[in-house]
Image 1 (cartoon, helix red, strand yellow):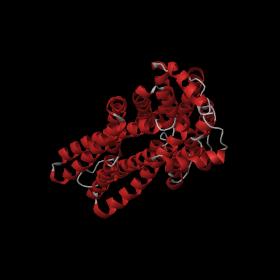
Image 2 (cartoon, one colour):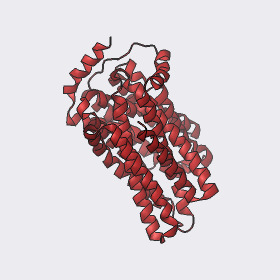
Image 3 (tube, rainbow, N blue to C red):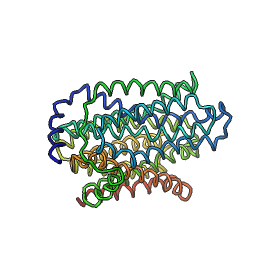
Image 4 (cartoon, one colour):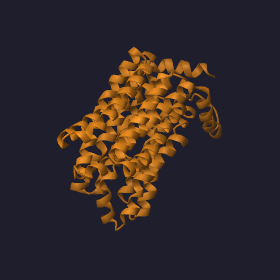
Length: 399
């Protein structure tokens, strides 16, 4: 049974074209953008449907929860079922969920649809393993990096687009546009993706049970998930507290300034294909160590801010945000390249374990960042991010 998937994969290598890579990168970006569209629109949305801010504030939480559950419960299906079919079904359901949000008559309806959007937006996490399966081993890092560029740009641009569209045409128009984009994407993926032979015949309960087995079996997977989770902890600690910090003395800046900092994420998107090429040439382990070191230096440099004039403090924060985003995204591409090379028959499950580590780190970072800011101010946040990045570097140096 193991020889069939390998032969099928070798046949697929000739199917990889630049147009198909662009299609997968676009698909990953549009899918993941769906979980962020609501965030800039919450204030307008709450007033329009006459809901209190607390209730509406559960929308992004439920969307993220749905995404995390989808990675754990749905992403492994890509090894059991034709991955193309999984992607197409999720595209249809994501389009329906976004349309449900567009016509929602109440906050309860919106909350239910938000959870479904998060679950189905995990089609992005089906596209990335599909790209790895189609890529020859010598180019896998580059291809994964290019698809990750699309995914990261989706995260970066989603809030900007939804804020602009909702301001001029309303929040419902944004969800209609999002549903339309996914419908077009589904049609393009239907025409542009090949079929993928299932790599296992395990039943669903046993399929999920193999996640723990893969964790125990592959030390490379454990180290990748732990290191990327630690880097994600620092990333989340920074971004979850930045707006509060900028609102306080000496900056007294509004939410627009904090949003502008998000443009630093473009650096991470641009770093992804470069990191992939370096992973192909120098090895993904080397790139993962470099990424962790760059993140550590970028976070640690922010400790100098109290001794600088305000304009230089802002410049250092921007430079630090660019630096750690470069490092963290480079490490992610390197870790994905490492993990996807472990077992061609289990790429969807391997990806689920890796991204599960990322989400655990993100959740812990938001909590620890808020606690550190309340107890020790911005230097506490810098310390949390620096220590977590140092721990990630130690994990990578020990391999």
